[in-house]
Image 1 (cartoon, rainbow, N blue to C red):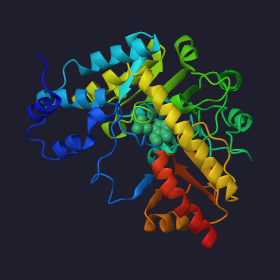
Image 2 (image 1 turned 180 degrees about the vertical axis):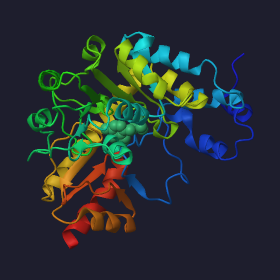
Image 3 (image 1 turned 90 degrees about the vertical axis):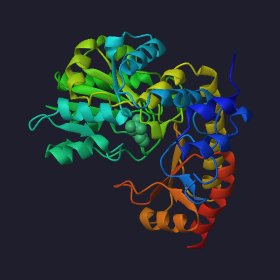
Length: 378
Ligand SMILES: Cc1ncc(COP(=O)(O)O)c(C=O)c1O
């Protein structure tokens, strides 16, 4: 006999004092996507700083996490196998093509460490998602970082030129923090050009924002990764699936490449709870569409408000926008925070740009007058 939701949660999360109010406050029956409850919103600050999904995870993911509690005292035995199979099914690849990780950040770290050396550098744009270059700094290895162009796009020509002798080329598509993207045809020509110049280099295509990208001709590089062991695609459950705090992501690559990277993983780096949430998220087609729609609406609204206020914000293919605020972004970030809105940190060398994540429409309607008000006051 099916349990009521309340009875089910009551037994499943008994002993987890902090989660009980969270789940009760969520009113899961109200909608498939779970809103952040009051008390978990950093004292009323509107959080537009980390490119998360403001609508929360799916109801099914929350229920799967709750169910997984009953095994929380056990080391994970089969979770990796189940999640690997779910990810493989989602992408129509084999399980041998999947590298699991604690966020896609783990795939980025492994690729950065395993595929570069003291003589084979990293190529990563400036600015782009900074994790791969940060690993190079920690290891004392070289990063060559061509600056984005005047339209804030990755300068593909300059990245190819920088790739001679590289161990790894990091192509963030769409790019964080600039929000720009390239169609698959450009990505494939880019990879071809890199390999002409540097046949041994690996190319890591980071598709963290894949589901938010509505650029014509945009598509995944996964088929290319299956065919060529020098290409890896990174994906995450942190963005459209609303599971940033659960830390689950993965890489897709040729089986030979996965074999090479797998030993660098921390064993069982994906927790049982995270794995359970990710497995059900692999089946959430319709829910993803709803999230895309909500993001598109709030993103269009945000771009219009910023551009109408005179702060150039270019089209973006992600769940954030970047605008030229014509002042120091660090000081402005601090001012916004004081006024109750957390926006992104500075992204050098863009010294007059602010990155603002897309919240719910309600959050954007409350946050943008504060942001533009502060800009116009100074
Ligand atoms: C482009 C990009 N790649 C990877 C990540 C890492 O995400 P996670 O480790 O949560 O999957 C982020 C996080 O913001 C990102 O923006």
